[in-house]
Length: 146
Image (cartoon, rainbow, N blue to C red):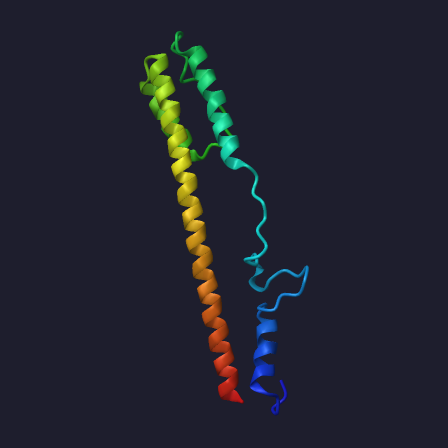
């Protein structure tokens, strides 16, 4: 940057370099997602509940033959919820027990989803604050250098 350049112009250039002034269609610096670019996420929660429903029907059909603990492959259900269901089904003796297992599993999945959303929000706020601080320091460093 030229020596005689005004601090505001230097700050603007630095901000552009750091991705603060993202051009339309351009990816932000640091490979992240810009706050205004929310990608719609697939309805993962519905997929989890559908899969738990299928697993519940599978287990209920087999409870009388004591085969309700037979292997059931999952894709949408998290590992934590899957392990909970497997361990709980091993203790289940009646159809009512099986229904209770899946009611609790649905609640556990919902709690995990809520916790993930809360954590994601906290992470986004933290990153925004860090970016703001970095930009402030860069601007001040350029003003001092001028």
